[in-house]
Length: 178
Image (cartoon, rainbow, N blue to C red; front, side, top):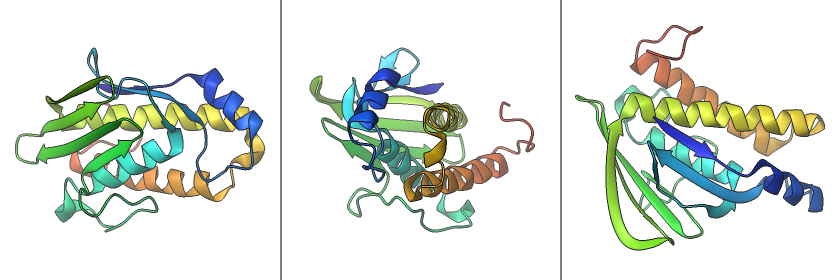
């Protein structure tokens, strides 16, 4: 399963230094794991941008089954299925018949491009779970900022991905796991 990790103290310190930067909340060293493999190796990037761009890239994987055609956060037009930041790039492709997801990635820690394969459902569930963990942590730390545009847009995008995820994998609303 995928999981995104970050240094909570680091992004909170960053926000305390300049809380007015509500358009990219919390620069931090991010890690994107598939199993034990870290694809982005602690890339220093805004955590909200990372999740927003992940959601936008996921939108491109199953265009026939998405009720919306765009999210607030947008991807690079040349590489719509990719997420990139300082020192990393991950490109997603999903075989919708087998649910096999391939992620091609490169990071500053390794100049060689590599790829890894996982189940699409596990990857998407891991991204959504990681985002929800971040969202809760953010709101607990900054309850007065829950209504800023970036947080509202990101939450809306996450809800749209979650709806698609539930529909695609036939998961009841009160359950996320298979």
